[in-house]
Image (cartoon, rainbow, N blue to C red):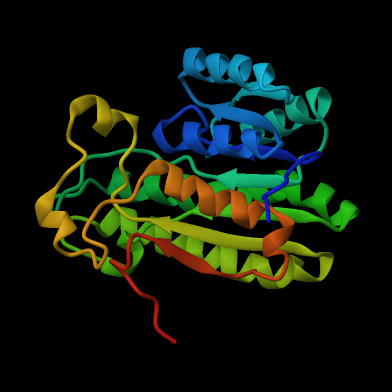
Amino acid sequence: MNIDLAGRLAVVTGGSGELGRTMVRTLARCGASVAVHYLQNKQKAAALETELKALGVRALAVQADITDCGSVMRMRDAIHAALGAPDIIVNNAVIQYKWKQILEQDVADYESQFRSCVLQNVLMAKAFVPAMIKKRYGRVIAINTECAMQSFVTQSAYAAGKRGMDGVLRVLAKEIGEHQITVNQVAPGWTISDRYRAEGTERNESYERTVPLKRRGTDQEIANVVAFLASDLASFITGAYIPVCGGNVMPAI
């Protein structure tokens, strides 16, 4: 049984970033054409576009501010003009900031997490779901985090943003399910990506001790779940929050 995304078109926000690049490449290897969203890293996004075209799939590097409605709609128009209407959206981008305890955390950080977690998912739905409804097919996949369940010290702004997007996406799953569009969340743990490999810091024993599988996950393991949810193998899964963190958090029934 193979994951076959031939003939599908995906958009990955934050596609030029650490986790985004692996998801983009994985979707392309499964046969999907991919629009690679970036905010500032045009060079890496353009290199990915070239790399994907060499694999024989259609690709486009496209810039947008995913917290701004007008910018997201312009991205939609550019993708529609170059590639068509996407079948799959992967909402992966997030604003980075320095984690502090609540009494020290700048209010602007809470606002940035609301905009990049909650508002991104609202705007991406408004931009791309209407075309999915017309086709009666679509996959909305959002990248959440194990932190949403942990709520550890200094995680408040990040956890608030991710918990907020969880609420939006669960409602969205109920609102558009009748159109055969699925809405799911992938929640990574502290994931090994190219940056950690380059630094030689893949291991972290204090974190690994908390994980039942006693290791950190990899970017490819996250991308594998995204590809599965994007495929017809996951056609009857919607409204799910799926931790990919070695059992570090376990949603209860």
